[in-house]
Image (tube, rainbow, N blue to C red; front, side, top):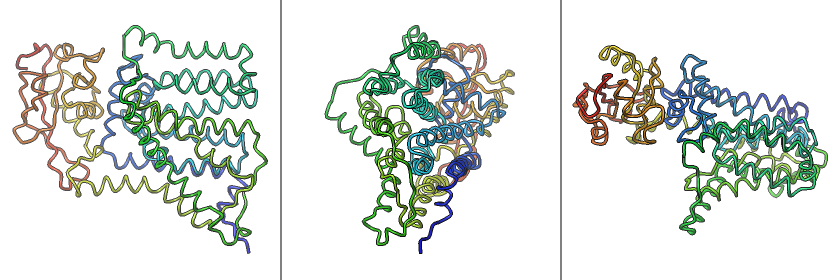
Length: 506
């Protein structure tokens, strides 16, 4: 007797319902976990907010759109990190919707939901997605771009040109590697008959104009500021090829859940193939296969190859863009009839792939403080630190806290937690930022913070050299979420009053 689980019946009968239930549950999970367990945002998110509050057209960290959106979300929730975590999950939902909609347009709803479920098992789309930044926003925009590129080229819908153009323009405002992704679109369009036919109209010209208008402020900033843009290096060819292999290996490891599910569903291990339920689709159009194979297989190879040439230690544009259509590629490569063998085993593997990042996160937070002396970055009490230093600076200087500097990560966390939302001076990492340099810091006053090694609280040599004449206050000890075997969290600090002359004692 053939047994078919409720999940398989939902996939067959209500693929959209099953998709939304699964994606929304995962998004809710990764929204609740950091909100409850993170006492401070990850360091790069705090830095993102420090840059975002300035609303610069361009920064040393790249195009500005993700910084602006993070600051807007932060302010809309009353300066609470919940807004940034929510924004990250909204990007995740939009990305998954675009992947599902694109897959459904090419191979039908039942196979599209299988592609989406495989995509969820890829590590790049789980816990890293809660740390909002350019990569998280870029992969959502890239998914929308692919969806509307299919509607333009594959379905001949001219009305999709406008959205496609806006999304490409926003991609240029998000990642420095937008030009690489745009060239991929152009290469596919020129290389295919439908693509060339689509280009033989005025629509691409109007689309290019929209892209230029949307991204023009950033282009002007690049030209006027003299900011450095990524340039390839052609030295050490052997080393770059070795790093390319490492990055490809990491991408394969990230997609290990997909590979394990394929192996578990192999017919070679099935003794009763006639009892397996079948997921059916109508034959896939050849052009649809070409579209998915090109944008599913070329980006992992190309983006991992580009990274070493530009001096990156990770995949250019992020793993999420590189692996976006891997699940769809696997499903479209399958026959029109997909047998789901060993349903209980498949469910267990899928759930394990989804749960593994959650377990890893919980283990890191709970057990790492007891196993070694490495700090858990999200266990620092950013809110408590910000309120304490904001209040005490105001009492001593009789003015609101305007700027904070010293240890870059600590300064960014204090700025996130302080009610006055001070500016951050990143003089040791990004140089004197255009909106806030060392002269302005001494003129307006501010706070210098660092990790104190003892109760004396003397500043580290590098901070003492950058800010000579500091008069350290008594270090403040804060409590982490879990102390474990870690040393007490002592934060040294010194007040620089407004109008202090640089190099003199505050």
